[in-house]
Length: 77
Image (cartoon, rainbow, N blue to C red; front, side):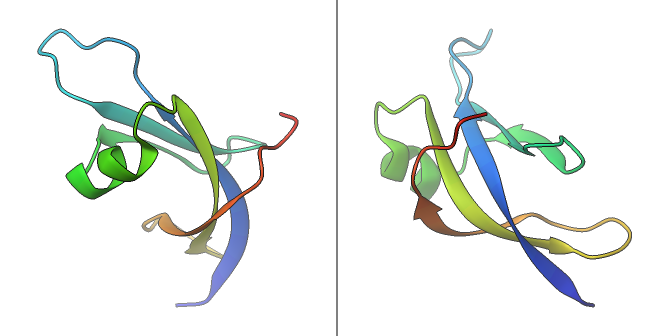
């Protein structure tokens, strides 16, 4: 499957009803979005930061996973 590299924002939820950490991942156009429980490794990496930006790989066509790559500087969107 061919993949393309994009920039995504990873944003932690401020509050959840059960006290768990959830995240929202999306690109500038919101063509690619994902809401999920925050993996422990990512929660630890983000620490107290409510949002971070990453390079990510996504399928060029059709559905698939958003694969986070390296962290990038904060974006203006």
